[in-house]
Image (cartoon, rainbow, N blue to C red):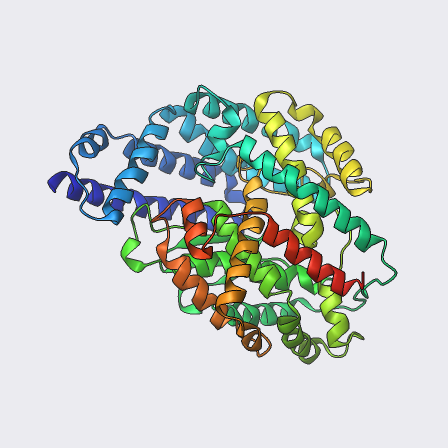
Length: 488
């Protein structure tokens, strides 16, 4: 018991320091002055050096060898700490600190290059990020390097297993998209100015409707919306385009899904390896089910339409037209603004490109051309500027290789969860129509959120849904929904 207690106490401090590091990242993206970028990079690099030393402390190996678990939670802690120790001891401290320092600095360089549409200004930095991530992957695994990075975000998944899922999804997605884009009916497009301050007020109401507790959170704006934190400090960000209120409102609902998941984890797991969402795929299932199956439903958009008329005046669209407008299908450039049909195609393209980058089959100098060529093939439109293309996402600039496929896995998981939710709480849409996702959130909290990282991703989804994950529920949902909207 002494070994177990010592390990848990040591890990508690490591988790607390990790939370501090995450808060520095939030500050950098949300409120840090631009001129502090180089200083912040040094701070984050130094803190990562401290964390790496703790994660590879030789005492962990001794405690892990001697500790005995009496409960499933204790067994899971030992398993997760052991995984972390085995992984981190393979990565030199120098490399871990340099990746943290460079990716912190890279974020600001990317944001400036994106704003100026200057891809060439960012390529040298991205080249260094890719070089370091290839080196890290080689340290971690003697086998597939991309799988080594993917395991950080979706433990147990492999690029082969994900490719099989994508290969099964693509034909039905493409066929449905062709039917929709060829339909005689087309939803209206909003032609109105939606002032920023009013959008942000309404976004706060949307977050509240989906269960965000402002006692433990806050909302700021960022170039790329994100959620940050765990335990009792979980923050969200959004962005505003005055001609497109959906950008702000649905980014907010999406990030609220992440935040409510973290806030719903059993508080006893705080400062343990189980005190976070179990994987990014499961995390994305929460943001995507909030945003799409719940937030873009006819029930919720009816409530939202009334609130938008109150906030912005009559913008010329009825409640029924508004539902179709929110779910309008169009082959746009930006992933975060993509409709439910195109979204997974965005992810499939990024998945293929980043696998090629890590494998050395694609070099950074050729990335923009490869992106633009593939985008024209998959979406039928030509990218005309870098912010529409490979500079649009923050993930590669900050070294998150292996993250992108978890978005599509999240959609698959969300489809399964929605099917189970509909069976368990068939009247939850009545509350959505009144502006409350409470019945749905309560079901998700009981069946998924509260467990945090107690189980692996696949087991977490399987137990919540009563069946192993499959892409079929998502595709069935999409076909039924868009056939109705587009009168197919």
